Structures are given as structure tokens and as C-alpha cells.
Image (cartoon, rainbow, N blue to C red):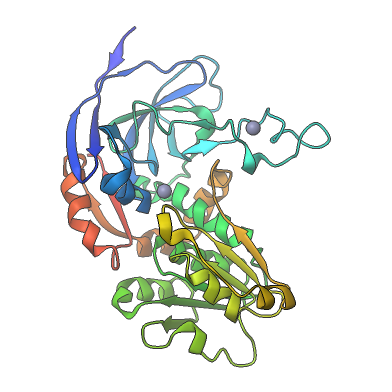
Length: 348
Ligand SMILES: [Zn+2]
Ligand SMILES: [Zn+2]
């Protein structure tokens, strides 16, 4: 079986990187071989470099590129097509995916998802093999570095939809990282009446991006803690938390009657344990919901949103770097996470 030339970045905790050849085989049934154009850095990648990579491994999961070859049975794509990848996609066939009454009709909960995650090729490389289900077509005219934001914008979209943000809502987003910024833009897009972004004043470039993406109001929580902030006649109906878990207690304390608090966060370890006022939660008829956009179900929509909202790509991408520079760039950026928006590896 013939192979294709490839180079991949390997990582091992803590903060060790290597780039070397990683030949890749022809795509198997249902697979695409993708020539990677861009791969965006996710917060998860910092955790991987810091402590999650017990042994040398490939990584990177926010990918766009051009189809190089297709495996048997692939009908949706052909060589030369531009694609963006979600890191996983529902299988569509299990008891969870199948519509009721045959199943639960909840593909977003599928536990047997199609994915390239954990395979021998990942995003920080030249080539990647993926199940075709993970791919969506990139609209004409869209740059492939912007298309690489399809997966992370799906995470923002999942958060916004988990809170059922809609017309007239007053939305508070705690945490101005890339997910929070995407959520601010989407909350505005979905018709929220008021979008408030809360973060620390040292995250000024992120806060400024939030304003440019549609936040009406910025709260600098080191100057005015949320608990002390005067929301006036109306407290936020929907609170989206992309901040450390302790922010959940704060969110429950300040949400409007009947408020919905949606949360996303990973790998907080012992810091994941929080306490909150159950009386306030009960009497105020609150909802607390977890967002976890895996398997991904949003890519077909988020790539259109990226096309229709060019300010997203313009505001979110703050750094670009080449494949061989992946390790040094991540190392340099680990202490800059307060100001970093999206850093994107771009292949030439
Ligand atoms: Zn990610
Ligand atoms: Zn399934």
C-alpha cells in the first residue's frame, strides 16, 4: 500500500515538542486524506502540552484543508474540495442517534462517534486522515485559516444554544476567551437584546474584541465584582460561563428569576468542586446546564456563520505561525493566554 509524505508535530508533557516525518497511508473506506491548510490552537492544546500528553503524541483538532484523496464509498467529496473538519461527528446509527421511537433522537449524545481524534495524524501536520462525516465544504471565497475556526465556533454555538439564547434575552458571558467571544457574537446574532461580557481588565484586547463582536457592555470584574455589579431593572436571563468553576456560584447568585446558567470548562481537577446556594437555585427556578460540543453537530452551520459574519475571523485570529514553529509558538503563548485570541498554524 502506498503512502503519502507527511510531517507532524509531536508533543509530550511538559512542554516538549518535536516535528518529524509521519508517512500516511491511502484513505480507507469512508475516509478522506486531507492536505492541511490551517489548524487553530485550542485551550485544550495548552493542557495537552502542560500535563495531558503522558507519551509522545500528535495533536491539533481545529482543522481546514484540501481533499487530497478519498477512500472507497466516499460520495460527498472529491480530490481538490476545500473542507473544514469537526473533530467528531455522530454515528447516526446507534440507539442514541436514531430518531424516536427507535432511539433517543439525541445525536449530540452519541458515544460511538466518528472521529480522527486520537489517530496517527492530527491537525498540527501536513496531512490528516479523517472519516468523511467530520468534514464540511468551505464556501467559495472563504480563507482556509478562517475556516479552521469552524470547530471552535461550534463550541461557542453549543454553549449559546444550550442556554437557549434568543430574541430579547439579556445575556451575560463570563470569560472573554475565544469561546466567550464567539458566544458574544452569536448571542447578538440570535437576537439577544443585551449582551454583557465580563472579564479581567488585563484581558483588554479580548474585551475590545468582544465589543467589536457585539457586546453592549463590558464588566471588568477585578474593578467591579459581578456580585456587586448593579444590573439595574433587569438581571441577565442567560449566563454563559467560560470561566473557572467558581463562577458558577456567582452566576446562580446574580441570574434573573427563571435564569439559565450554561457552563463549559475542562480539566479543573480539584478546582472543579463548587458550592452554591441551593435555596436561591430552587426559589429562583434556575436551570444549570452543561455544554460539551462533542460529538460535533454544528459545523455545517458554523462555517456558514463564519462566511456571513466576516468580523469573526477578523477579530478572533490574533497570531499565525508555520508548522515547524508550533512548539516554540505554543511555549511563547502559554503565558500570554490572557491576551491571546486564536493562534492559527498555517501551512505554506
Ligand atoms: Zn478545541
Ligand atoms: Zn450514534
